Image 1 (cartoon, rainbow, N blue to C red):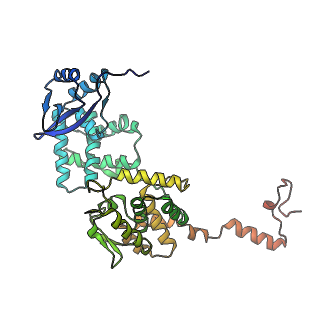
Image 2: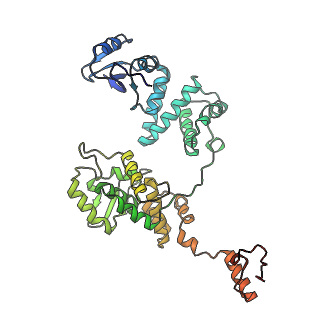
Image 3: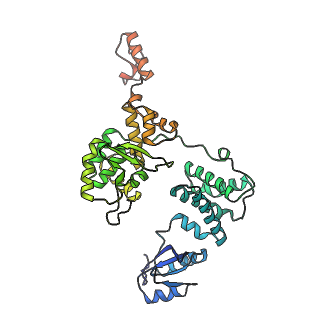
Length: 394
């Protein structure tokens, strides 16, 4: 049985105070707990943050995690993996990582790439614990001894190599990393695709108007989830029935069509929800909707629609491209609509277009038809369950 604490729970956050990163402790007012927290090294009260805070160090992180947890619940729920790794680094290592982050930012990488590369390099620094990387073997040893044990995807493994390639340039290492020789080959998995009937069913079972608009747009315009959530009201052009996708993946703008069938739904949504800036926004704060929220309601809709496949927002984009190809749309137009830089990326959909594949005559069916014609018999081994029946059916 869990011990019931007499102290209120503590939520630990990482925040900047006067330009310096701090560990912030939030809890309900409690005299005895305040007395305990005040005794922690360099603990201070902030009127601005309205919390007790400590220097952002590994020692204080462990102190809070290992000591305060003995007397009450301590929650690190809002700590990102990057923050947790960062706090385990020494001041010098953290300074190196911050410098690398600034270097990447100067290269104008996306927020997602910055976050991923910083996290991957932070994990390497924590393991390596040396000021310089002397050779490729040190990187290979980290991958073999630590990284691979976390069972990362092939994609994450390739991102690690790319991040470390940039890190070596930033730290002016005396050798370069040959990406092709050390990175694993890309997976060649075929995308999961919904049938046209499943798409309709998915939209029909989604009762919430905002959620229905999200699903309809992700499918009918082939949008990535990040592109959908960045759409602003000014991007909609109802006269031309187009939507402008600004700075999509690869920092490219493009126009995609709005399906005629969802225009009434869109007008209904705009009248009902009256978004102020973003098409899909948080109702109270008027900020972009969270991607986690989209994934969550999509999962519920998939269950209600009785779809057995694993479906993500990107599956709707895959389905859009596949259905376009099946309807006879030129693959060059599909490439433009999806915003792909290379035609090879779009070509993957030729492997999943079911209509074209169904039209291919199976060689076994041809052989059977020829055999039946030559024997002038409608009986074939597959027509009879008798194991002793000969191929002639006699």
